Length: 472
Image 1 (spheres, one colour):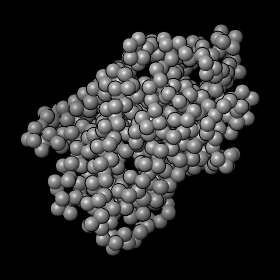
Image 2 (spheres, rainbow, N blue to C red):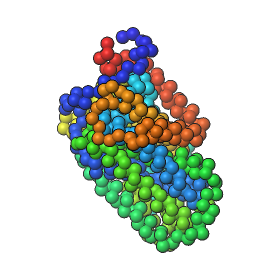
Image 3 (cartoon, one colour):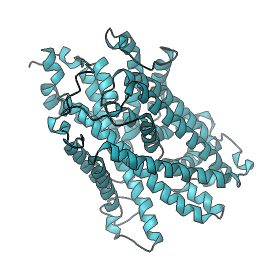
Image 4 (cartoon, one colour):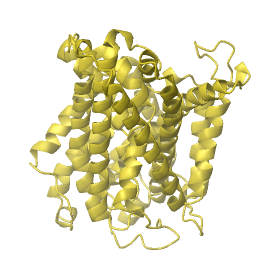
């Protein structure tokens, strides 16, 4: 196989009838309800109990709900594009598979590699937050771990820490749950999501009686620029819906259920974030919300400490669902990339009984667990947003080329992006604008990660590509 620039842009031929072999195809068990719960489970995590307060104090003031709404608008536009792709190409791999079929292998690899970082670092960062909340619950019962096992080395708030044992263990337990099969995993996720929503509704109902309208003045002390910057940070809260699209191949009726699952989960989560933010800033003046636990802080001011304990449990449950869905998304992405030959084929091998890529799941879980255990939170959360925005931008512009494709453009689809081609281009522009708001450190880290990915691709993926072999 010779290297040529033309070979870099070979496109994946999509034959929807080809993935029927039980040895390669994933089992179809998911419904629209399961997908919606997956989306809510991934999007509403620890962020809803922490992010509104930090954004209000540092960037937006009481108008924090506008940042969440703006981030939701960008995500919604991207979600419409995802929905059209997922109803046309119901295969595992999400944005990676879509871009492979439209723009070719090289760009698909770059995107897939960026998304691998998104899932790995998202799971790792949430695991660190999960560990902190879990240890708070333990301390309420008078139980404490040795300091060396409570956080990663270099964590400023925990001198003497070496290894975050709770974070390491929870990621591996999630991997164990996923190896049991997608049906069992979604049942656990559905229960936890309902608990999480109930806890959020409890805070909103109780807090509504303590709202002081004077706390909403001034409403936008940092101006619109503060809202825009806040939206780029709030975007982190919504990235979970990308994981929903990785489930395409395991959905009973993907053409109908994928758009429903993606859009429904975004509507529910946007409502939860905006309502909670409105109540929180009405109860506590925004200048006092720059704390690690703003919701618990607000409950303390309301003398509702008994609810604070329930909120802590809800936060742990909420973060567990994020870990579950994001780990699932990462393993299915690895499955799709390895099935194309760009990563070792061992990562696509399915268990005969559960139809789950077991080895792939354990490798992903172990790497994420190690990251969570040894790297401080502020350093592992940097890469998540930029990889996702990059994916959203490519998927958005990809819809324009999807419609023009001679084969895929005429393929049966149950959903089409409205106001085409204006909404796809608008989504693309919004994603680029939010990327420009991210810190220089994030961009540097992103470039370093991509360089590592290029080394992997040119040393292995290019030479083992099944798509290229089919073309030859």
